[in-house]
Image (tube, rainbow, N blue to C red):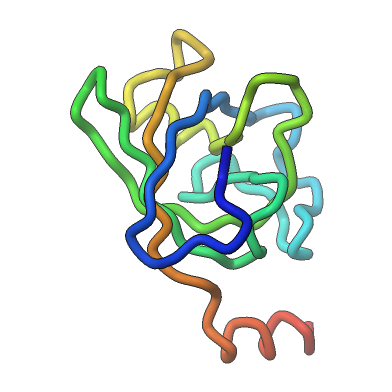
Length: 118
C-alpha cells in the first residue's frame, strides 16, 4: 500500500496489473487520451502527474512511469500500468506481477498549469 505522503525514493510493494486495448482512446483521470504504448500508470491515491519507478524483481527490469489515471479497482491490486509497461517489464503474458514502486517526484508546477489550461 502506498504511503499517504510519499517522500522521494520511498519504496513499497504492490501487485500490478495492466490495461490496454479496451481503454485505448478513452480519457484518463488527468484529461489525457489513454495510449496503451505510453509509459503511464493508474494509482488510487498518488497525485496525478507523479513520477514513479516500477521494478519487476522477477526480471530485474524497471521503468519510470507517470501516474495519469485512477485505479486499479480490483481488490488486492495497487497499480495498473499500460500494456507497453507490462510488456517491457516482462509480465504482459501473466497479467499481474508483484512489483516494487519507488516514488521519484511530484508533478512539476509547470505540468499542472499546462494541464489546467487544456
